[in-house]
Figure 1: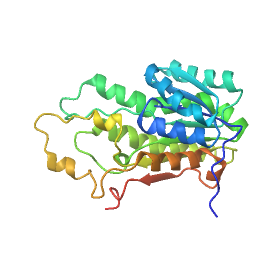
Figure 2: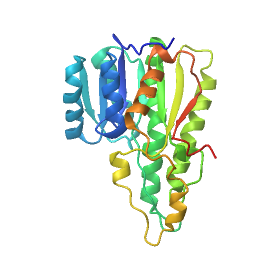
Figure 3: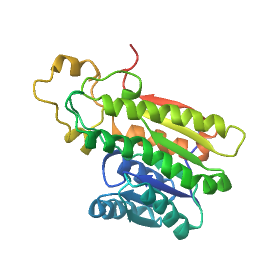
Length: 253
């Protein structure tokens, strides 16, 4: 029998919570009863997420931060623990994708992609670990189907997400004897602000892009949020070092 996702009395931190999968995850965790720390660079949209969570009757802390800054990552965790006195789940959802030819991609775009997609989850996890160990909690990282297949014009994104998957596994092994669960999800393409903002380089070969577009269409954001909430909760007790692919078959073959 499937376990009910119950997070009453627990506190979760969600990055990328201003929109898309981050917002959907925050609302699913709120529905399950978790107090929330919502983190994103977009302060106004964070307030919108907080308003959407209000009907669930949970406490919500809005914390605007630029996660490309390591100190800001540590500050977000400190704020969460100061407000709620504990941290039970860290959901690293924030992400950046910059489509570009590998010959012409600006160094700044490559650096930003790595900073948000890979370095921020590391800095957040490092700051959160003592609190998560005390709470016997969980880290859930959001990777991508791009971690498992090469995608034209997305070398930086693929590299960051592949790194995140193996970082998840390495940390899981390091803490395999400790009371913490560390996992990841790897969604396929979803209808989010990131997807809406994607643009391809001039003269891109779109038949190459079609190779990673999938035959079953986009993945539903709420379906991914449901799996993240499960992994963040006691219902995910048997998962550790896993990366659950939710991509409608993109990486199947």
